[in-house]
Image 1 (cartoon, rainbow, N blue to C red):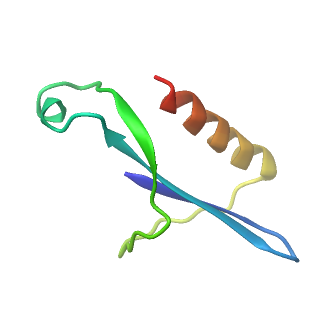
Image 2 (image 1 turned 90 degrees about the horizontal axis):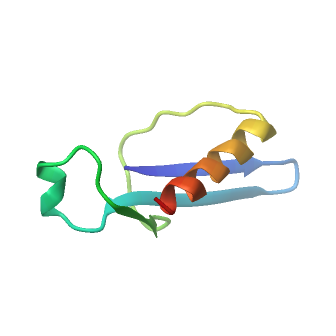
Length: 72
């Protein structure tokens, strides 16, 4: 799974694209919770999209949560 977070202002658009990947492939078939890592997905192509406009507070909360989950 990967996310694209964009902050759009009158002057600029800032994008952060990242994905969550399992540290090991095979355990994902057997366990509900596995160790993962965050990787840069900025060059990845995609053909599906779900978008939602969020507030600045929700945007920062999403970033904070992703960072928190990356340490687990």
